[in-house]
Image 1 (cartoon, rainbow over the protein chains, first blue to last red):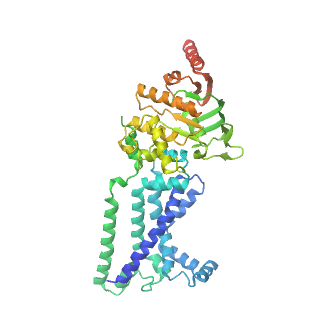
Image 2: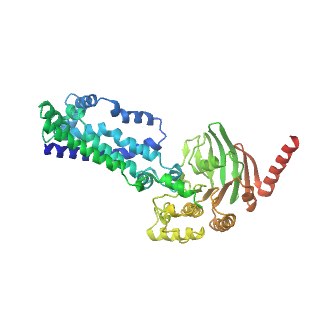
Image 3: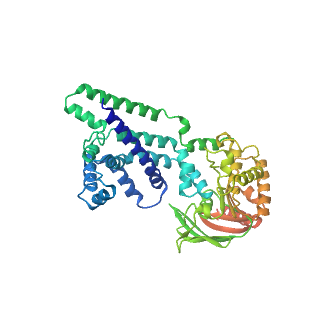
Amino acid sequence: MDWQAFALTLKLAAITTAILLCLAIPLAAWLALGRSRWRILAEALTGLPLVLPPTVLGFYLLVLLGPRTGFGRALAAVLGHPLAFSFAGLVVGSVIYSLPFAVQPIVAGFAATDSSLIDAARMLGAGPIRLVRTVLIPLAGRSLLTAAILSFLHTMGEFGVVLMLGGDIPGATRTLSLVLFNQVEDFDYIAANRTAALLLVFCVMALVVVYARPRNLASGSASERRGGRNG
Amino acid sequence: MVDLRLKAQQGAFRLEIQCALTAPWTVVFGPSGAGKSTLLRLIAGLDRPDSGRIAIHGEYVTDTEIGLNRPPGRRSTGLVAQQSALFPHLSVSANVGYGLALFSYAARQQRVSAMLELVGGEGLADRSPRALSGGEAQRVSLARALAPMPRLLLLDEPLSALDADARDQVLTRLQAWLREENIQAILVTHDAADALATEAEVALLHEGKLAALGPASEVLAMERKRLLARLGSS
């Protein structure tokens, strides 16, 4: 078992998930509650990684972050090294690649919040940030947990983007998916089986957490509606 | 005083109102679908009119001509709807104190207690909204809207879950307190008894238009005459 690759994969997934939650919560709030006509375009762009071949995304990121573009050269000048073929570049690619897996569950959770609760918070002076912090996030706990787990798992299993953007550098960009690919290429099926089984067990356990989530993490809207009808 | 000149289209329904509501207690009366709740939402700033303007106590809060539309929380307006809409993850006390974010802890607790007492909700402070009856939830919702001391209180059939005696009791206390604090109130109802029970100015809405505005006895007499005339002609 390549434990270095395992640790790197977990680190990549954890950092990507943390960044994604920070980005996805405000973006999801805007998509779920905003009235801008740009929302549809933003929603389409956010969902693009779901249908775009990962190699296409990896290729464009490789070009954008590499020395062929002004942006890539400027970034390299600031950081002291190019983002392509580095762990930081892998994080950027992973964040973009897993964005819909974070945004869509949170949008669904926010959109399911009882609109009368949102109206009440706005009437009582809550601006967008307070509304998200004090009403939407607490009531969409289940969606946030789902978003975090799906983002984590999706990042753990990514292959195309990692290969295109990160190469296969041990300790820097070699993740478990690449290790598995290398093991199969070398006809080392016993090692490949161990790596695949580890990924499989990890994913199953995480999904069990998603589906066995406690009921009290559910959106409060339904319970509020039930409570409001009591005599 | 609330000065309105509004046009709003929602699907096939069209609301077109021009009036000044000057009485301390105004009852907006009309059948279901007359546009009563829509009117309150426009005044509250939760919806935008297609055109027109709204002034609350002489200050414009909506003016479509210059693109002015103050957010609901910056109109010094409270809204209590039929659905209590209490935040289910917060205690009753935190619900009532939600609009008092700038208050110190002690001042907030004091105001919360005073408001719960006003609506007859003493002893509910530590309860969860999930553990409240419909009537209790409506009392707490009323206390929450009153806590920031708005200049204007909008009530959309707010005590429908209470029995008649309890509702009269709360309304009497509320009216006296609003008078004392100089807070104007607009109550929406489709129940003629509610409109006649209070010494109120009545705005009669019919199919999105203001059919009459004046003292309850006069406006409802006109309505009775109109109904009788319709019966006579059929």
